[in-house]
Length: 508
Image (cartoon, rainbow, N blue to C red; front, side, top):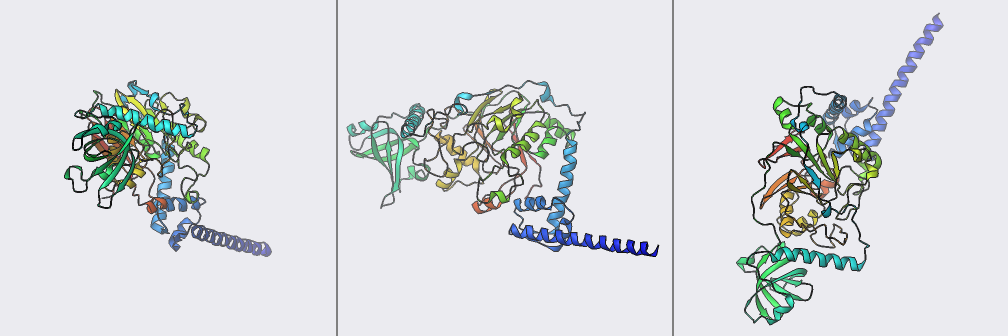
């Protein structure tokens, strides 16, 4: 009996030793894992992480948020959020029987304008002839828009030689070259389909001051000028294809358009969160637009794999599909691709292929478009564009920046052309049809690549940048991007008013 007791004591001691050894081993694993990620962790944080089987995921999430020194406070917040997320996932299957969305009783009026969408219509072979055709098509489309401008009487560049020196002359051309002269003037070589000439923006001319930086190579512009000599024009005014001046179009409906997607948003749009007033607002959401980067993708930017929890693109889309399937079927959803999606990087981008989202493609209320993509909602013409070309535009025009992407989009609307300059960072495919020229005047434009919520209005067109649900990554820090995560904008079609709903703590 004594021996049995002795054996029991030894067994207990051994269990204690094993438990301590496991804790020591896990502590070492945590320290090693954090060190591999080139981050730091304090003792209190290690104690909280011990016993968590998913400590690697917790560390990865904190690193994604830009936290390189992991302390106990950061870990506690993450553990609490994980528990809440688990509860919310269970809540998804619970219906709010008191929630009666009026949008459910209404059949939406939505159609995809496929003639402006490259999906299923890509015919480029990547040959020199494709490029020549593309630029000629672009010039023809934009010059036709310019010719409708009042007060403009353009003549072919070849006929400028017939205009007497000192006389006024209007021409339309594509900018072939741009440079600064020794005296500080800005020279432009412009061409049409038959000829070319030199146009000079005089540095001290008040009428054209500030215009030069807006004029980019490959832009199609009209200039009102004075002839200086046989092949030289002095520019007095630059005109863009531009939008016409008009009042914003509103629709006699109480339904609204939201633009975002996320776990927390799922509960909200199902009426499971918020007051009765909030439920009324949510119940009027009939449309949801998602402007690309639907998944993180794989190998998109340097060292991205170190930040990914799911490293398989198909599994990323499976998770995305699970989220979208939880949105009520009475909500009409429009999804366009982005640079992180499984489509070509180059503009125009076709819609996300069906093989990645087979279940979503079975649902009648989900519509896939390219980027740019065009739809009509309740009679409003809506253009969706992820926003890749805006980076080059912002980098070329001094007063634009990534914190105000709506201003960059307004410059695009003035040019009526999404492509800034060929040969910069954003690649383009020379399609037979130019899907990047903005042929019609949109009532609404949705963009999303800048990860920064922003809104603007120009000549009756409302521009909405939907922001992001991803916090600041190391790559964004290097680029100087400051995201505004967790904000859902809602557009009131009846009034044009935009309201924001915050799903993370608002920072002052």
